[in-house]
Amino acid sequence: MPKSVSVRVKILAAVLLPVAAMIIVAILSTFHERTLMLEGRKEQMVRQVESATSLLAYYHDQSTSGKLSEAEALERAKADIRAIRFANGNYIFVYTDTGIAQVVGPQPQMEGKDLIDLKDPNGVPFIRLFIEAARAGGGDVAYAFPRKQGDPPVAKVASIRPFAPWGLLVGAGVYIDDIDTVFHQRLMTYGVALAVVSLAILGLSLYLVRTITHPLEAITDAMVRLTDGDRNITITHAARGDEIGKLARALTVFRDSLMELDRKEQERREVADRAAEALKSEREAIANTFQQSVMGLIQRSAEAANEIHHTTETMSDVADRASIQARDAASAAGQASTNVQTVAAASEELYASISEISRQVADAARIAVEAADQTGRVNTMMLSLSQSAGRIGEVVQLVAGIASQTNLLALNATIEAARAGEAGKGFAVVASEVKTLATQTGRATEEITAQVADVQQETAQAVAAIRTVSGVIDQIRTISSGIAAAVEEQGAATREIARNVTEAASETQEMSANIGGLTEAAATTGSVAQKLLSASSDLARNAERMRGDVDNFLRGIRAA
Image 1 (cartoon, helix red, strand yellow):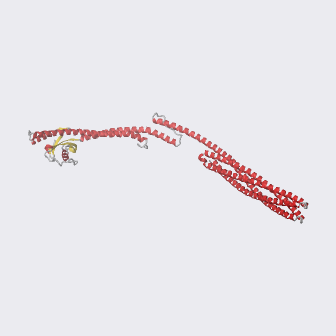
Image 2: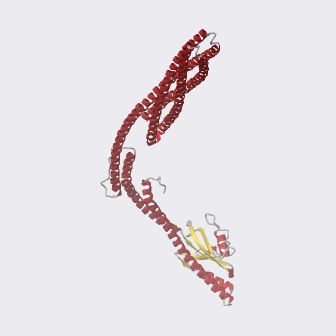
Image 3: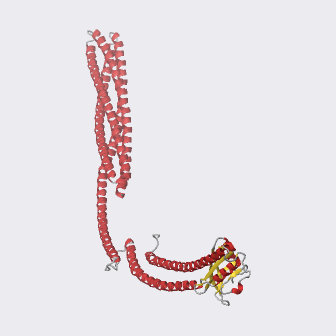
């Protein structure tokens, strides 16, 4: 039976199906009883027909043995058969195989007549059916025939047997209308009894169904309300001692369990809400701490980048001024070289123009003093440039430390985002970006450190060159003093003056070469300062970009 069929229908079906089976069995039994009665009647007919056939055979034997003639034997046989009665007046009839009546029991006037076309009121040609049954070796024929002449035809069954030696068929019929009457009476009796029993069973079944389905419907309704979330229900029938009572009591336990689960669920939700609130507060505190730390580092990075920018601008200006002053020193050195050449030429004419030599020596001394002053200033600038490069190195180390701390904070943020699961995937991306920026900042600071080291090295070389130039200028000053003394002693030391002038020319050329190196060093310092300025600008842009990424990361953390 389908699962969608209700319990009421199933119970009624379980009760009514046996009732229906009982009705069917009663009907079949009644039909079987009718069949047995009919078979009993037929058995009587068959015995009578066989007796009549035996009589015909006996008289046929008498005729064949010569004891009786065939006509006499046939007449005696018909007389004996005509006298046979059984079952309340039933008789034996005999017909030829062409339909001529030989023995018709209570209607002897029909004997000798051709009745082959005789039909019952229903149009059944029963004589022809007798003949066909005899030709088939025997059989039964149903038809209608009156019990007495003038009575209405009633149902009758005849059993036919052939007697071939004389071309006859022997039959006997029994009325079965009384069997049908008994059958219908019993069928009616059984029907009434079964109807009464069925109604009683149906009424009892409906009562039992009501006592079962109504509590089940109440329990089902309570279960539906429970599944819909209604816990304020009253469960009835729990006091019953049958299975429905057990079901109601089980449902009561189920309801109480659900109420306990609801209470625990409410407590769990409250705990979860408090935990979520605490987690949110903790996340907010972490975000604030992270913001303060990272933003402080970014701010210090930006300030350091600005300081590097200003320092590199100052260093670039110093390098430019150093280059200009180096060019001036080179010009002065060139002038000094020219003057020394002039002194050399004048020494050849020393004897002729001593006064001119004296003037040239004074000019050389003055130029040497100016060159000394210029180299002193350049030396001071180079020292300042070296100190600036040192400060830039310190700032770069600070930026490297900030980048390292930023990288560590980004790693911590990545770990926290991984703990957050699905909700922290976006934060992990931002933390990775922050870590990438910190790595880029570290690489930039390493490049700046290398550049600053180059500047410091080249500045040290420039300072050394300037010191060499200063020594040369001091020598020039000493030589000029010697020249002045020699001028005073010109008469006695002309050869010494020529030698000193030659040495002065050599030293002047060396000074010009040193000043050229100083000019190249100043140009290199300016180029390095430009690279450092570009690196500081990149550092400032990376710090600003890191600030934006950290802001986005913190917004995501706070919004989670």
